[in-house]
Image (cartoon, one colour):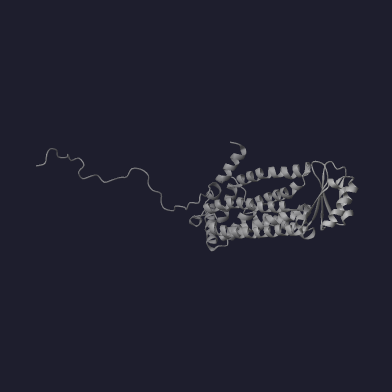
Amino acid sequence: MSKLGNLGARLHRGEVGYDFVKNRKIWYGLSILITITAIVGLAVRGLNMGIEFEGGAVFNTPKNTSASVSQAEEYAEQASGHDAIVQKLGDGSLRIQVAGIDTDAANTIKNTLADDLKVDSEQINAELVGPSWGEQIANKAWQGLGIFLVLVVIYLAIAFEWRMALAAFVALIHDITITVGIYALVGFEVTPGTVIGLLTILGYSLYDTVVVFDSLKEQTKDITKQTRWTYSDVANRSINSTLVRSVNTTVVALLPVAGLLFIGGGVLGAGMLNDISLSLFVGLAAGAYSSIFIATPLVADLKEREPAMKALRKRVLAKRAQSSAKGETDVHDDESYTGEPEDDAAPAVVGPRNQPASRSRGRGRPSGKRR
């Protein structure tokens, strides 16, 4: 067995592990800091909305255009009087986006760009996009997001409990806020591909969280019938038992997305891949983080406020103190919780039973026919 596989088996059995729940305040603080940074970036810089949402025109120049990106950007801004976004594609052509212009202005800009770039105006392809189309996409995206969140909360509240539903909802909002904030800080253009990527990461983040919740629900079924572990202890074991699986799933998902983002968008110059790959990359990483460091510790926090769990914690701590006073080994450290209640009854005696001798023992059985 590989070292990673051996580590995963030991984590699952509870032989080793990290106390995520005990150090939850550190992770809460880190998440709050990142979230505040994302919100400030969103408020200060705002989102760089694509022409699909603001309306405008896209000009595609012929292959192997000699002008650089900075030169084409300067030409487009001088011709239109608006900010322009220029991307150099893999075949050497340029994609020039200018927002807030109409059809007449687009034709004028097209001719001016042809003169500045020293190409035939017929070789420049101009496409007009109205703002109403992007507005419809944005409205549908918000509606889909709202319906998704409502259905998720209802399902988790029924399948698990309301505390887990609330924790999953907080984790999803955490992931969305960080992803949108990173977009604002980096300055990438927000396109319909960005919206698709944003909706995609919600399902992944929720899937990773539900895996831990399912393990936690199974292990805490009869937790109040024992006095060895608190709810936080079992929650921490649930995280550790699925830790290697979560890490492996996240790494496998991030590798192809990183290829799209850094190689496809950065090296090959396919700028349109950045729209969806950045949201996927940031969202997948944030989703894996929130499922481990935010969702389950938050559930443990909420559950520990229940009277039954408070009473359980008192019994567990009292038993541990009693064991320490007697110099006994703490069962909390060397055994794993299986979710089964403790059996306080005396163990059954194993072996042959002592039965009374039969009264007829030693007497011969009469033989022959009865008369």
